[in-house]
Image (tube, rainbow, N blue to C red; front, side, top):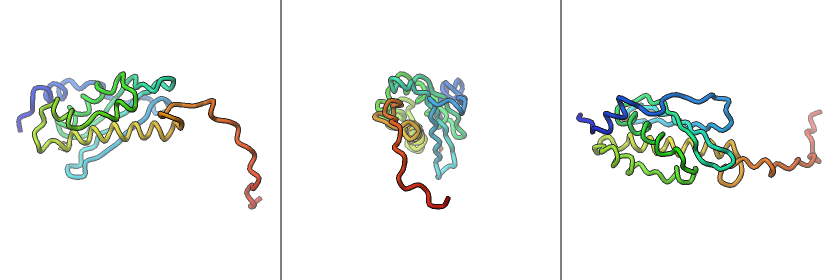
Length: 151
Ligand code: FES
């Protein structure tokens, strides 16, 4: 199969390959797999908690050239975007940018799913509107009036 020049470029010079430190609270991870081919994509985003803007991104992809190119591309596209803006990135835009043939469309879907998974992971771990850390919202909880009876 002939890859487009852009796929070859990302494949040969992948942008932002790697991982962030696992204990960094501003980092969220999206890990997705394509059952049809077994390819796996891990996308990490580093989010500025005060603005909700993605400052940086990393990926690791075990998969075909199109999957690697798609994930490399989205690490560039999500940078500087809010979580909402990142969620608006569609696989069709990725496929168009990389000129993916129809049999490789699912590789771009994997990249869109990886963004969604990373944003969901961030929001799950950082409660509050827009996924931002709302430290002030963490009012001390009232003592429970029905403590465990097991004691
Ligand atoms: Fe499955 Fe590319 S062939 S992700």
